[in-house]
Length: 496
Image (cartoon, rainbow, N blue to C red; front, top):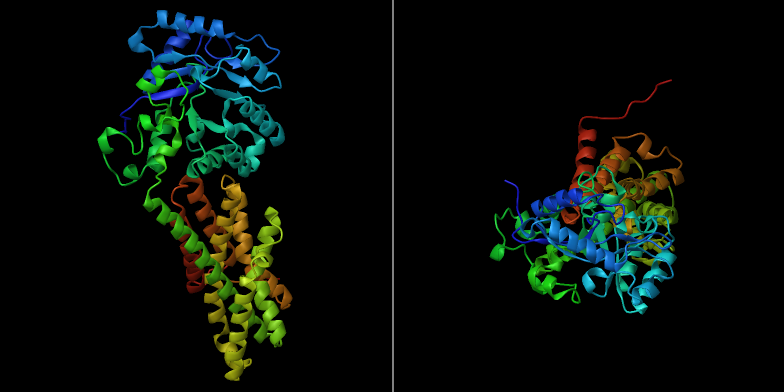
């Protein structure tokens, strides 16, 4: 049985008024849209016809007239409450028109729903929204998932929110879409508590309709702790954290504040702020640190052993260990434009690699096992250290890409994980003048790719489960490497 909410929603972005913009075409279509809205537990709608400079736009008086016509044509029991608003295409005259009362704010509040053209530069978005804030308005950026500049760099979305802009996404964008950059982007915003409102942006009675239940169920399934535990009901019949106290639309019409919860689509309500959540974030951070150290030590050992086998002196062994331990991370940082790379910003990795290399060198030298005894155990030792280092650095590379704001792009974060995992080993083999290990042994690169994709898919589809995603990616790499070695799996080659 599908879950049903114990409360009503407020749709703050909907083109439901008949014959005022590219939304509803007739009163009959509006009636059908209102029926769909009621079926989706929508109890109030802020109507938002388009306002575009230089176009024939509905003035506030006409919007109020249309609202009254809908109220008279549709029985009160069948219709959500309707309140005036506009979806405003920004230009330099918008602030003046708002001051003059030629454009509607959202339900008479100081909040304004603002859109831009998808290809606009970020600097234009930022300056326009800042101007509205300066004039005393609180801008809500409509369907923020549509803007190319934000999709390419999620840090811009965070910058807007820090400066007082609220972000709205469309309900349809919350639903899963295979390898959709928009879905990944929206899920990253949700996971990081950056979404303020979700609206239907409904235009018709078919296709873009005022449906929100599917999105609500998706959000509850992913982010509500009670839902994840399989609870049948929420405390006091409400989703955790919901209630009138959550209202963030302080200046809205008092009737809306009293009878509905403007915060129902204020998505932070599903993202627990409890101590448990803090422990999970702390565990994730600690695990990343542990993975970093595991990878650094493991790859430093494999680099040192390779140098010893190639009869390098202690300096050569140290250089090879450092390159193996930090080379993949350096390539990863170069790809995403992080300068200087991590190995230069945090010398601890180089120090750990050097200490590890010198310990290995001294142990082998003391046993006088160069290279005869080392050769007998070399492949097995190198295999396991390489495997753990590969798994650790693969997951670390994916998580770094996610933290840089690229969680919506599975291909990129998977490639970053793969590069971090295999880059150091490939550099080691090139410096040691031997065929890179990734091209000749035991499903090495394929294991890294599989682990990276596993971690990336967890982040993409289940962004609230970061820790299980990291552990799953780590386990996939180790399991594939073990099975490949045990059953002697290798990719096909052509023997000449």
